[in-house]
Length: 379
Image (cartoon, rainbow, N blue to C red; front, side, top):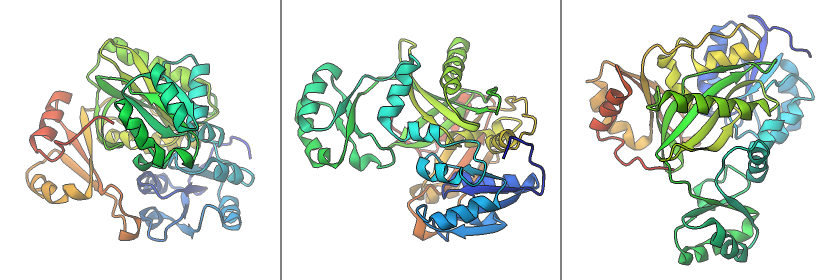
């Protein structure tokens, strides 16, 4: 299938169970498309907006083929979908996002090699296959540093922060589970994220740069516009554009950076899919991340993105629910989205809140004054 325009009435497929699909499916239906969803859990909320629902394992090739052959185009809504699954779907239908970028970012060694090839600043690292490798590498990398498996998606249980030599012994319990990288911990002042779309011709459309904060490796807060100097914003976009130019990818994606006290930028990661930091654009800009992603894939004209109002997004976790009840009856500038995950799919974020104000400082003050998210910490 070529790169022809898709129109209302054509069929779009969405594969995955993340919260991105919950927003993506109704956006596709609003634009007039038929939607088929492939999910691994029959309770997945994304299925609620599907015209056709398919539930199966990602290893079920017969179901995957049937899903692909029903669709004019398939999208994956999360970077956690295996690149092998996407490569298989490409045999039967069009998947503009492709599998190559997923393959790179799902393997930390491939990702680091890609960044080095692009001559982009990254944290110093070493490949680790034994405990002795850790002792040898830490002498050049220094403290603190982090031991991470090369395959992403295992979570913090397969990682170990090393702040001093005695911490190295703690790696013994996980070191035999596979290959790792030992990565230096970059001291940073801010974490920045840029969401962009890349079309079939390689043209880029940027959303405003976001300032993000994390809690226990999960995004907790995103504020736009980021409180940074114009030259820093331009450099973030320039570097992100260079990185994306080296990828075979169509659609929305995120590039994240660390900004150090000296003003240096270190790339943290690429997410070749929708990223939840982009939820802030539901209210901040004149087009949402979800619609711009869809417009890119189906070859509609892209919206000229404009910042409408400063906005902040905070994720709602289960432990926040009772505290949020107070804000529910007080705040007239807070906008709520709940994902409604079933018990069978927990733990998952409960949803998110968009906070509107006249400045990013006022947004931060409103969020901090509630005390709900006081325990934010750097990733």
